[in-house]
Length: 145
Image 1 (cartoon, one colour):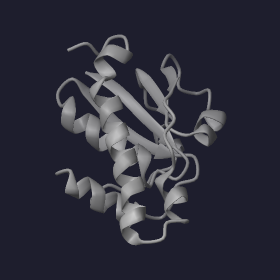
Image 2 (cartoon, helix red, strand yellow):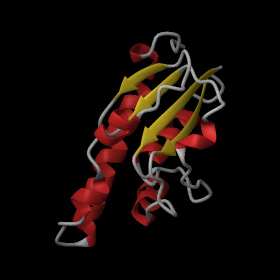
Image 3 (spheres, helix red, strand yellow):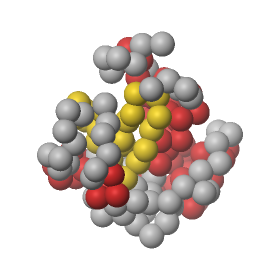
């Protein structure tokens, strides 16, 4: 089974979504983990809400610092934001590093005029990440199913 680590800044939104989608869609073929370079204390509530709308409950997941995985081996380390890409450490051994940038819904939601508008940003990014994860077998060598 391939091992993938998704990295983002706070590990409170995008990387958590990617982990959940990957473990759901590619169960038994790819196992995904997520971490942040500066993890938040909790997953953003709107992240949990929009994932629940899509049928995935991530309320038990917690943000983790990337050092938690320092001694683990991965086939792929996928950064989901520019800050994580710039800060991605070199200690991932033979893991292939890939960048797949997505907008930060938290930042976009800060200027939203309503909660519904904020949720629209989260839903869009959720769906974009799901589409990326669905295409992983074509995008990542060794993941063809």
